[in-house]
Image 1 (spheres, rainbow, N blue to C red):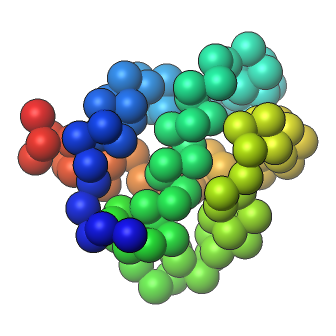
Image 2: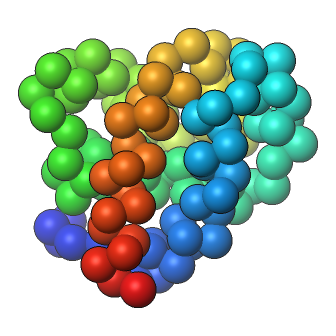
Length: 113
């Protein structure tokens, strides 16, 4: 796996960046409603983000890597519907992960665009 964000992945993430920022700041009930009605392409973006976190393209410090290891690995390379079901079922650590990832993703995208 390359150690950089491809343009295809960057465009996909940029397209859904606003909704990722929204998911970070809304209540649990609102987050579940958004995830239930979200398009499949949003879950494709989440799969890309999880893959890049695991491979080190999106850097996580050691503390956060250990903290979110289960969430990342349990959703790594799953089908879109499996990721969707899993995040709707138990999205507890998901918002906390987004809080740490949004600034990192934003800086990566600003370097590319």
